[in-house]
Image 1 (cartoon, rainbow, N blue to C red):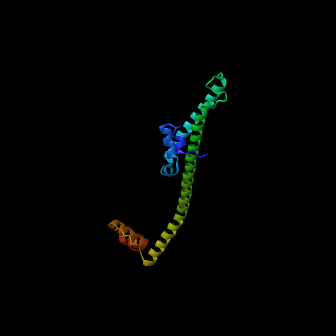
Image 2 (image 1 turned 90 degrees about the horizontal axis):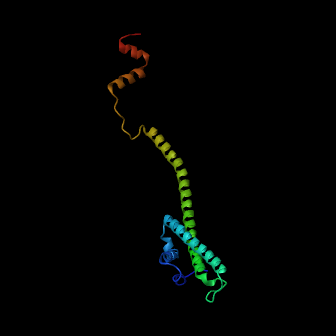
Image 3 (image 1 turned 90 degrees about the vertical axis):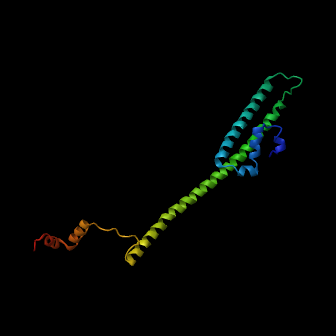
Length: 173
């Protein structure tokens, strides 16, 4: 059974009522995943507190002698049980929202991984097309660096072979 704010107000403290209010449809959508996890922890702690209190009260009522103002059945702690039930409902709402956000996050991550895996093959094809285009046009758009004088001499020697190198030294073959 879903509890309304009018049913929860007389039972809950101000902090607990704030948790109850934030678990409702509109406010819960504004909470981030980190804040939701904090609210889950806080709500679970409160729910456990009231469950344990209800158990202790039930045991103490059974052990106590029946007096004129007290019923032997133990309906005195009905408010504590209702409070635990309200907090269980709030906890369920928070946990459902956390599960939904985590599923969305996982789906987005897998979609991003799929796009990332497809992206390198596209960039590799683009780079290959650029290289092929550069070869056809006779050069790239990058400027060529100037060679130093010794580099020019060495490249001339390598290009002409051993005969040219010996001629430059003054030896004729």
